Image (cartoon, rainbow, N blue to C red; front, side):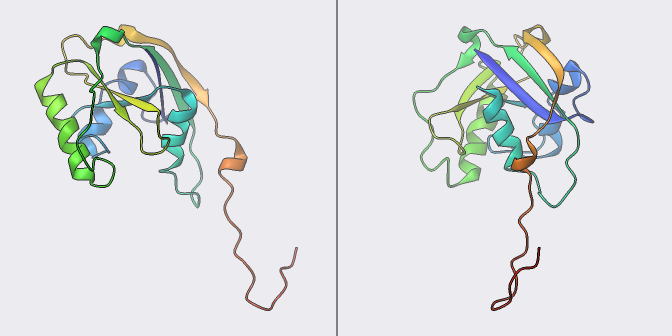
Length: 166
């Protein structure tokens, strides 16, 4: 399965940095708790971008981003038939599910649903699994830029009864 990763250039300058799992050690995510090395990837470049956009604060300057593409052997991706009830609404449920997978080291990759686009998938990678390989990375680092229209800040509306000035 081809997967994609986008991240801040200052953290993902090399393939080793991009796929080392450091981010998971310093911060929790949807599918893991802080302290676990993990790499989040997406089934498409557009989904990877959406996963970044949802976390960007549009009031801050956007830093440079890099993207990577990797090819994960299908037989190494765990594709559960179901996920825990309430995984979408209770983040502690999805985190416990991911933490259990990371600690068990059953497979180097786990396919999980994304909250942002129903029917699409993210693929989590466990860099501590013995079968994990940086050799899966097929492309990158490549510069990635968001279309400016996606990052436009909303203008403050005029006070009631007052026309907006151009």
